[in-house]
Length: 408
Image 1 (cartoon, rainbow, N blue to C red):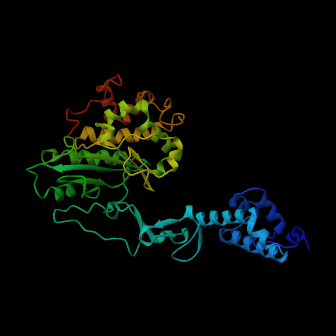
Image 2 (image 1 turned 90 degrees about the vertical axis):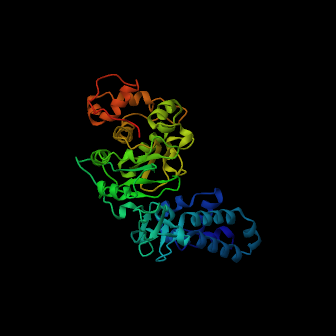
Image 3 (image 1 turned 90 degrees about the horizontal axis):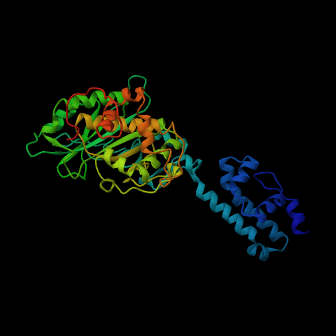
C-alpha cells in the first residue's frame, strides 16, 4: 500500500474529506487555517481541534506505511504545526464556562490573566479608571474622601446616566482639571456637586498639585452647553485655576458608536497632520509637547489601540479621547472646545480620505474652516465660529455673545 493510496482511503474526522485532499492542501503552501474553515464550514469548536486531529491522522498513515522518518522530516508536519499555532493564537477557552470562542470576540480580564468569551461577557463590567474588566461580583467599590473628591479610578457612570436632548445622538463626556487657589474654601467640591448634580463628579488626579478634575456623564452637546453654563455662572474661577497652570488640561471623550472606523481614521490624520499643526496648537491653547508629541498616523490606525498619552487616544473600547486642550473653566473656552470636537467629528464625514498625516489635503484645517462657513454651522457652533473670526481664520458677523473671558 503506497502512501498516496492510503491517504486516499482515509478520511479526516472533522471535514469528511480524504487525507489526500488535506495532504495536497498543506503540502503545496502554508495555507491559512481560516481558508479551511471557510471551505469546510467548520464551527469554532471544530476549528479548535482540527489541526491537531489532522496532525494525528497524518502521522498514523505515515507510520502505517513505514515512513515515520519521512514524517518527522517533512514540510507537511511543519505546516500543520503552524496551523496549530495559528489556532492557538486566535481561539481561546472561556475561563468561566469552558466554551470555545474566537479571541477577537472575547475580553481579557487582567486580574485573572485570562480570557472570557462572548458567552459570559454580560457578567463583566468595564472600569474606565482601571482600563480593565471586572466580574460583576468583583467590581471595586470606592467612596469619596472627606472633601467629597472621588478616587481617580472611580467610574462616574455608576452614578451618572447618559443624558440627551434635541434628538442628538452623539454622546460626549468631559474631564476638566483644576487647581485650588490659596483661598479656596474646603467645601468647594460639595458646592460643585450641588451645582452639577446628576451631571458631574470631582475626582482625584495624580498629575495635579493641589486640585481635582471635574468629570461629566456622557451627554449630548446641548446638555453640556446647558450644564456648563450653569457651572460658569457660579464664578468658580475665583477659587479655582485651570488655564493659568502648568498642570491642567481638558479632555473630551466621544462615544465610538457615533463614528465609523473610517471617521476615526480621518480624525487621527486631521489631529496629527503636519499641515494642521499650527491650527491645532491654537485651538488647543498649548503646544503639542504639553499633551504628547504628535505622532505619524495612517487612516488604518483607527483599528489599532493607541498609547494613552496621545493627542487623540484610541486605547479605550467605547470612546476616543481628545487630549489636546489646555485646562479651561471659562464658558467661552469650554463651549468652544466642545463645539470644535463635535464639529470636527461631523466634518470628517463630509470629505474624502487622506492616506496619512504627511499627505493632508482633503482633511486640512482650511477645508474645516470652509465647512464652518455655512449658516447652519454658524448657528450650531456659535462659540467656535466666533473664535475663528476673532483669530482671523474666518470673516463674518458672529452671534452676539456676552462679553466674558475665554480663559481661566
